[in-house]
Amino acid sequence: MPSWRHIRRLIRQRWRYLTHGLLRHSHVPIGPELVEACKANDLALVRSILSTAAANGSLVDAADSKGITALRVAAENGYAHTAMVLLEHGADPNQVGTDGWAVIHSAIVEGSSHIVEVLLAGGADPYLKGSYGWNVRFTCLFILTGLC
Image 1 (tube, rainbow, N blue to C red):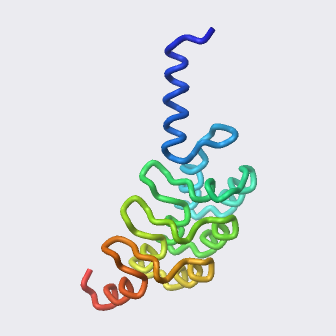
Image 2: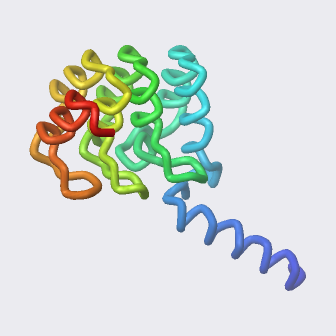
Image 3: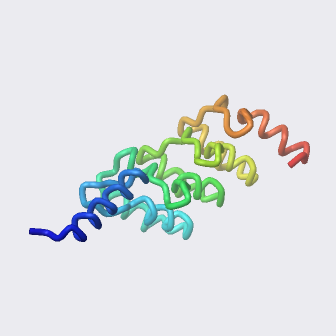
Protein backbone atom coordinates (compact mmCIF):
# COMPACT_ATOMS: atom_id res chain seq x y z
CA MET A 1 0.00 0.00 0.00
CA PRO A 2 1.44 3.38 -1.00
CA SER A 3 2.09 5.96 1.67
CA TRP A 4 0.14 9.21 1.89
CA ARG A 5 3.28 11.14 1.03
CA HIS A 6 3.61 9.20 -2.22
CA ILE A 7 -0.07 9.74 -3.07
CA ARG A 8 0.15 13.49 -2.37
CA ARG A 9 3.24 13.76 -4.57
CA LEU A 10 1.47 11.97 -7.44
CA ILE A 11 -1.58 14.21 -7.09
CA ARG A 12 0.61 17.34 -7.14
CA GLN A 13 2.47 16.12 -10.24
CA ARG A 14 -0.69 15.30 -12.14
CA TRP A 15 -2.33 18.58 -11.12
CA ARG A 16 0.72 20.49 -12.35
CA TYR A 17 0.58 18.64 -15.68
CA LEU A 18 -3.16 19.26 -16.03
CA THR A 19 -2.99 22.96 -15.19
CA HIS A 20 -0.22 23.53 -17.73
CA GLY A 21 -1.92 21.41 -20.40
CA LEU A 22 0.99 18.99 -20.46
CA LEU A 23 -0.59 15.68 -19.42
CA ARG A 24 0.45 13.14 -22.03
CA HIS A 25 0.09 9.41 -22.40
CA SER A 26 3.64 9.02 -21.11
CA HIS A 27 3.02 11.55 -18.31
CA VAL A 28 6.10 13.49 -19.41
CA PRO A 29 5.76 17.23 -19.98
CA ILE A 30 6.73 17.73 -23.64
CA GLY A 31 5.90 21.45 -23.92
CA PRO A 32 9.03 22.82 -22.21
CA GLU A 33 11.29 20.50 -24.24
CA LEU A 34 9.68 21.65 -27.47
CA VAL A 35 9.99 25.32 -26.49
CA GLU A 36 13.67 24.87 -25.59
CA ALA A 37 14.34 23.13 -28.91
CA CYS A 38 12.73 26.10 -30.68
CA LYS A 39 14.80 28.59 -28.67
CA ALA A 40 17.93 26.77 -29.86
CA ASN A 41 16.52 26.67 -33.42
CA ASP A 42 17.32 22.94 -33.47
CA LEU A 43 15.06 21.83 -36.30
CA ALA A 44 16.14 18.19 -36.06
CA LEU A 45 15.24 18.06 -32.35
CA VAL A 46 11.90 19.78 -32.98
CA ARG A 47 11.07 17.18 -35.63
CA SER A 48 12.21 14.39 -33.32
CA ILE A 49 10.04 15.59 -30.42
CA LEU A 50 7.03 15.97 -32.69
CA SER A 51 7.49 12.57 -34.32
CA THR A 52 8.12 10.57 -31.13
CA ALA A 53 5.14 12.04 -29.33
CA ALA A 54 1.56 11.68 -30.44
CA ALA A 55 1.66 14.88 -32.51
CA ASN A 56 -1.70 16.45 -31.83
CA GLY A 57 -2.64 20.11 -31.48
CA SER A 58 -2.45 20.15 -27.70
CA LEU A 59 1.14 18.91 -27.77
CA VAL A 60 2.31 21.36 -30.39
CA ASP A 61 0.60 24.22 -28.56
CA ALA A 62 1.86 23.21 -25.12
CA ALA A 63 3.55 26.07 -23.32
CA ASP A 64 6.52 26.33 -21.03
CA SER A 65 6.30 27.48 -17.41
CA LYS A 66 5.93 31.12 -18.54
CA GLY A 67 3.05 30.37 -20.91
CA ILE A 68 5.15 30.75 -24.08
CA THR A 69 4.46 28.31 -26.92
CA ALA A 70 7.03 26.90 -29.32
CA LEU A 71 5.43 28.70 -32.28
CA ARG A 72 5.70 32.02 -30.50
CA VAL A 73 9.39 31.42 -29.74
CA ALA A 74 10.01 30.60 -33.40
CA ALA A 75 8.06 33.67 -34.53
CA GLU A 76 9.76 36.08 -32.15
CA ASN A 77 13.23 34.88 -33.14
CA GLY A 78 12.60 34.77 -36.89
CA TYR A 79 12.98 31.00 -37.25
CA ALA A 80 10.86 30.52 -40.37
CA HIS A 81 11.65 26.85 -41.00
CA THR A 82 10.88 25.92 -37.40
CA ALA A 83 7.60 27.86 -37.57
CA MET A 84 6.66 26.03 -40.77
CA VAL A 85 7.34 22.63 -39.20
CA LEU A 86 5.24 23.53 -36.16
CA LEU A 87 2.39 24.76 -38.36
CA GLU A 88 2.58 21.55 -40.42
CA HIS A 89 2.16 19.58 -37.19
CA GLY A 90 -0.95 21.51 -36.21
CA ALA A 91 0.29 24.46 -34.16
CA ASP A 92 -2.41 27.09 -33.70
CA PRO A 93 -1.28 30.38 -35.29
CA ASN A 94 -4.16 32.21 -33.59
CA GLN A 95 -3.31 31.26 -30.03
CA VAL A 96 -3.18 34.22 -27.67
CA GLY A 97 -0.59 34.06 -24.89
CA THR A 98 -1.06 34.81 -21.22
CA ASP A 99 0.16 38.37 -21.87
CA GLY A 100 -2.62 39.01 -24.38
CA TRP A 101 -0.45 38.96 -27.49
CA ALA A 102 -1.10 36.57 -30.36
CA VAL A 103 1.79 34.90 -32.15
CA ILE A 104 1.41 37.14 -35.19
CA HIS A 105 1.51 40.29 -33.06
CA SER A 106 4.79 39.16 -31.52
CA ALA A 107 6.24 38.54 -34.98
CA ILE A 108 5.20 42.04 -36.09
CA VAL A 109 6.72 43.68 -33.03
CA GLU A 110 9.98 41.81 -33.65
CA GLY A 111 9.98 42.98 -37.27
CA SER A 112 9.86 39.52 -38.83
CA SER A 113 7.92 40.16 -42.03
CA HIS A 114 8.81 36.72 -43.42
CA ILE A 115 7.41 35.08 -40.28
CA VAL A 116 4.24 37.14 -40.61
CA GLU A 117 3.85 35.80 -44.16
CA VAL A 118 4.45 32.22 -42.92
CA LEU A 119 1.86 32.66 -40.15
CA LEU A 120 -0.72 34.14 -42.53
CA ALA A 121 -0.13 31.26 -44.97
CA GLY A 122 -0.51 28.88 -42.02
CA GLY A 123 -3.95 30.22 -41.16
CA ALA A 124 -3.30 33.17 -38.84
CA ASP A 125 -6.27 35.51 -38.64
CA PRO A 126 -5.25 39.06 -39.65
CA TYR A 127 -8.29 40.42 -37.82
CA LEU A 128 -7.48 38.68 -34.54
CA LYS A 129 -7.26 41.18 -31.73
CA GLY A 130 -4.44 40.96 -29.24
CA SER A 131 -3.74 43.07 -26.19
CA TYR A 132 -5.33 46.51 -26.17
CA GLY A 133 -7.76 45.30 -28.84
CA TRP A 134 -5.26 45.76 -31.66
CA ASN A 135 -5.59 43.74 -34.84
CA VAL A 136 -2.65 43.03 -37.16
CA ARG A 137 -3.14 46.13 -39.30
CA PHE A 138 -3.25 48.50 -36.34
CA THR A 139 -0.21 46.82 -34.78
CA CYS A 140 1.72 47.31 -38.04
CA LEU A 141 0.72 50.97 -38.23
CA PHE A 142 1.68 51.52 -34.62
CA ILE A 143 5.11 49.94 -35.17
CA LEU A 144 5.72 51.87 -38.41
CA THR A 145 4.92 55.21 -36.80
CA GLY A 146 7.46 54.51 -34.05
CA LEU A 147 5.06 55.13 -31.18
CA CYS A 148 6.18 52.08 -29.25
